Length: 247
Ligand code: RET
Image 1 (cartoon, protein in one colour):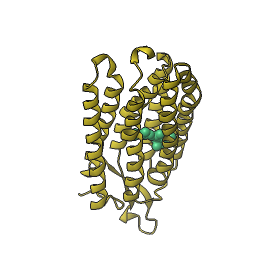
Image 2: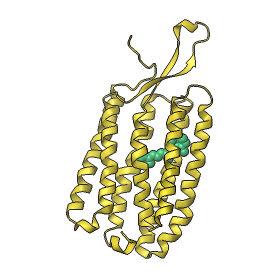
Image 3: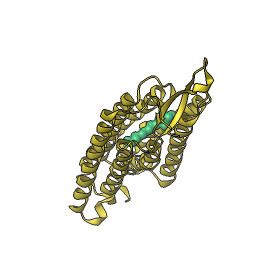
Image 4: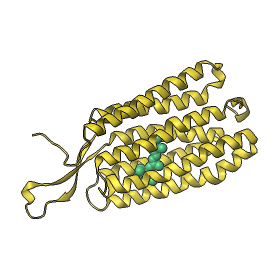
C-alpha cells in the first residue's frame, strides 16, 4: 500500500527546499574557501561554520526530494473510522540536522565568549534535550506531544539564559572586539531560536499552517540561523586571534 500524507509539500515547496539547499552549499564552499586563506591554527570558526551549512544542505536536499519524512495522524475522521484520518507530513530529517548543527552553533558562540569547557558541554547537552524532545513530540499523535514541547521550551530557556547573561558578560571581558562579535551573533541567535518553537507549534504541534507554509517559515529561519549567522561570525573574527580565546 502507498502511504501518503494529506498535507504534503507541493512541487513549489520542493523547489523552495532545493533553493535553500543550493544556498547552504554555496555558503559551505565560501566558508571552506575562507578557511584556506588562513593558517591552520586560525581555522576553527571557519570549520565549525562550514560543517553547519554542509549538514543543512544535505537535510534540504532530502526535503526537496520529498524524503526524510513520515506521515503522522493529526485528526481522526470520527464519522467513519474506517477511512482513517488526516495525516501530516512530518520531516524528521530536520531534527537529524538540528541535533548536529545546533551544538555546533552553540560552540561557535560559546567558544567566541571563551567560556570554560564544562559550561560549553552542559549547554550542548541541554540543547540536545531540546531537539530530541521536539522530535519525539512531533511524532506523538496524542496531546502528550505538548508535554514534550514544554520540556523542550524549558531547555531552550536555560540555553538562552547562558547566552544572554553568562556568555555575554564573559565575551565582554575578553575584549571589545569579542564583545561586539558576540553581541551581534548572540542577539541574532536569541531572536531566531525563540521563533523555532512558534513554528513548531503551528506545524508539527497544532497543524495550523500547511506543509508549504512550514517550508517557508523554517526555511527563512534556517537561512538566517546558519549562512547569515555564519557570515557575521566569521566576519567578526577577522581581527581576533583564536589563541587569545584559548583555542
Ligand atoms: C523545538 C520544539 C520543542 C521546543 C523547542 C524547539 C526549539 C528548537 C530550536 C531549533 C533551532 C534550530 C536551528 C537550526 C539551524 O539552523 C525543537 C522546535 C524550544 C531552537 C538554529
